[in-house]
Image 1: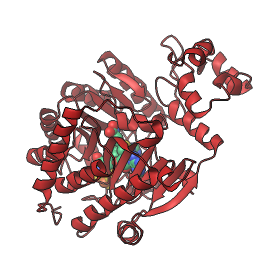
Image 2: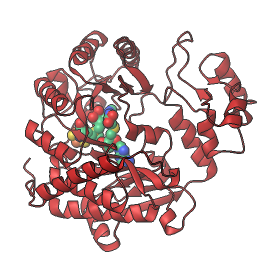
Image 3: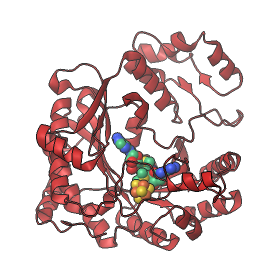
Length: 449
Ligand SMILES: C[S@@+](CC[C@H](N)C(=O)[O-])C[C@H]1O[C@@H](n2cnc3c(N)ncnc32)[C@H](O)[C@@H]1O
Ligand SMILES: C[S@@+](CC[C@H](N)C(=O)[O-])C[C@H]1O[C@@H](n2cnc3c(N)ncnc32)[C@H](O)[C@@H]1O
Ligand code: SF4
């Protein structure tokens, strides 16, 4: 789809400014540590797609045309407003997600990054990710995103089987996906991620593992495995309900997941989160912020955020969601400077629930030190030591609650005690964490209802 405005006049200038920012930053260094309250990650939602995939219920729209200049101006305005409201002075990662942000023009990406750097500080070494569908970006376009300030690409490859890609309603072939991947690796070496889905209708373990092995010969240092969630309201859901497609088999999906983990481990990947694997230290710092319950701002239609509105005198962390529908969101941004649809102050208990639910997704679990940042009064042992449920999980080897390092943690504040973890030591029986199939780790819509 050709989007109007993809050759916006201001882009070259914006890209130059982005480059100057990187150089200036290189000169002054980026190691200063701002206090946690003034640091945040930033998520930018680009809500448009070329076509609706059969399985997807993310906040996306297939428009007749896009007023990209208006969209760009609203994203810039909303970034400025939320940075001011939050009092955030340092943005440590930016993630352009969607929808299909690789359909946006590089000038839009450059304009948002420039606005963020001006309103707060965007260090040169901040991770700046753009999601790219294997159809939208040519090599030159990917390079233009790089010049605009993007330094990590996340490619929605989904499958390396053309029949499966058709079933998913994708507009690319396996060949296109591998070509985009090769081009991306050439331009962003060591900083390319791919999404691969599993548990599709009629998918079998052996052929899927074949795809994974083939991908291992081509991929870079980061890979996400997402089990298909059959979402109500999607074409795939209807097909399965009508019996024109077989329902995905959860046992087969579990086998794919377990075998896939083993294959990736052998290939030197660390499973640092339920769905995410990295080698050579290529963990996504943006997504890590979500799992560590760091602050993040969300701009664009339907974006989620979690931050303390310090700049507006607030003291409590809020869960925020922006208006979903792009035209309404734009009207609100033009009128009020932002399109925040809902704000929910998070109580201490809700915050701790999030710390647990997010942290348990990661391989490090929740260290005592990490827990203390959110709850200095009560230790993990105080809260969970006497729980019969926790005792049962410990006895089954499904949970690890380690109190031995607690004294060291609180006395020295420098040793990260193991704390609590659901990723068991190797010798313990394999576990299937009940949340392992949850593809969205950040957008807990239930908090906002
Ligand atoms: C929302 S998409 C946005 C990126 C891009 N538009 C694309 O399709 O590649 C991000 C990722 O979510 C995953 N995803 C979307 N719908 C899903 C579903 N129903 N079940 C599992 N994963 C899903 C896909 O792997 C996709 O790459
Ligand atoms: C499914 S994840 C894929 C991440 C990818 N595997 C990686 O490692 O970079 C990304 C998707 O989650 C959703 N998402 C992430 N952060 C969000 C936020 N703060 N608000 C709304 N949606 C968000 C967006 O739909 C985005 O396309
Ligand atoms: S999976 Fe990606 S490309 Fe497909 S409809 Fe969803 S957001 Fe758009």
